[in-house]
Length: 408
Image 1 (cartoon, rainbow, N blue to C red):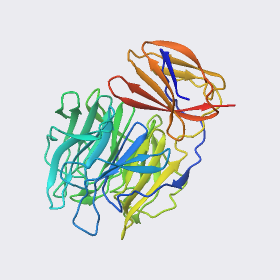
Image 2: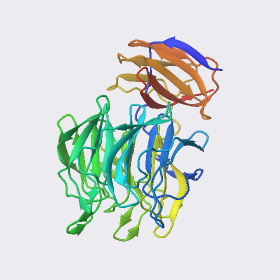
Image 3: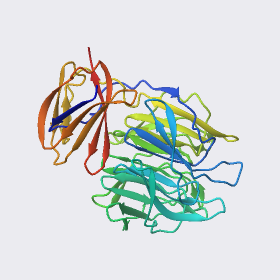
């Protein structure tokens, strides 16, 4: 039964306060075949993977595949219309996916940029990246802007850094990265800050593990605690909720399969205490879909890979059975888990729809939100279980809000 109810409300997930119990679960292989240096991003409750190349041939791909984590299935989407490439940047923002830069099969660096709309399954070319063409750049989004820079050109690391505004399709220069020039760094965004770490210096050869925090409000960089997991390049870096993850990659002792978690509130690192039961690798992909972490593909040193895995335990699947509030947010909800009703406090001047999904991906309830207020919502006959909740704004932005647990 699909419920459509008019309320002035919304919710968001809150920090979870339980000890992590990590585990890995193998998912359906990537259907595009073995791949290295591919693109990956998520929009709402779907993930997108494509592009990249294979190490045994001078080739690159232009495909795009959509992953449904609820059904563990892949769906072919519209091919990327730009030049096939490897080592591109990719990220999502405002309900759209973005892909740009990279390296083509005939040894050309690229600087074009493209936007993918999952609602229409169409690509649109945007203004070119304003710096020199390059590969292995970093990118992350914070609020209404994306931040792109660094990267490699003829094995020389770049330091320039730019902000992209999708509302005007314009780029602006930001403060250059203050660390050393390097190839293959990684980046992620947490809250209103961005982070860059790892990579390989080429002159003289060195593998740094420094971590730098970028504050867009002041356009400035601050050095933070170095990555404890050791130096490495061609690794992964991405975020889930308020935590950063770094893993895989090359190191001085060989390829790696360990993962490390960065907590910006403590400026500290902790290890994921369960290694993936699969090959060591580099040139892999990683992404988060809601609170769920997925990694895969890459190369194990001799063979390209297509396997796909979920890391469980970074954010617990079950929410604590106590009243949880988020006091410094414009959105609050409690109690969670709920039995008969849940209260939502909505303090945004924004209109849209709150959408509830079953674990199968089926929509079971929709709530229209029109004004700042709070309201008590009953379960309206919904069965016990974990429900995924998203916010769909009238402007088209999709915000994944996490889980609500309904008890018997």
